[in-house]
Image (cartoon, rainbow, N blue to C red):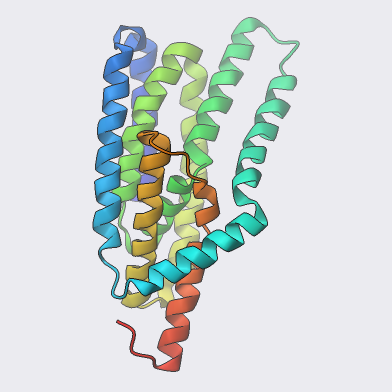
Length: 240
């Protein structure tokens, strides 16, 4: 859970900076930092994709995963979940004061940004499986920058999104660690490779904003790659 704790800390730190000095940070600086992190995320995604032992394994996993993801409408489910939570919470605060509205808006917007997304799920799985928190470290930097912007706009409510991240990502890491104890190195390497493709997609779609990609639909690939590798190993097929 090292990565999740780091993420928790950077959100709090970024939120405090936003409260104290957020308006003094030029928008161009924040935008350029996000672009720099986007390029780094893309390079890191390519780097971990190269760990595959057979390029056909992540390729077939991604193809099957995207087909399943689109059939299950995962992207719409994630977006719909975020919208329903936001509408439900904010509608319950209509009678509140402007300060209460501002607090709730900041809390909801920040919480959804930090937890509803492939990087939170993928990074937490990596952290839980092999203790590799590099992906969550990248997410932590991104969330820290975002929390500066949110806190300067919405105020202290943004800080209360940090415990949500701690519980959500921590639970995923603990679950992944429990389930993944029986996985051998080949499963972990191929999952990491698929994760690299997803991470590169996040960089292109969300950080660099080159082209919008429905990254949520890629998530089932993480399940398919495990099934494919276990099947090949079980059949004794030499694939690496």
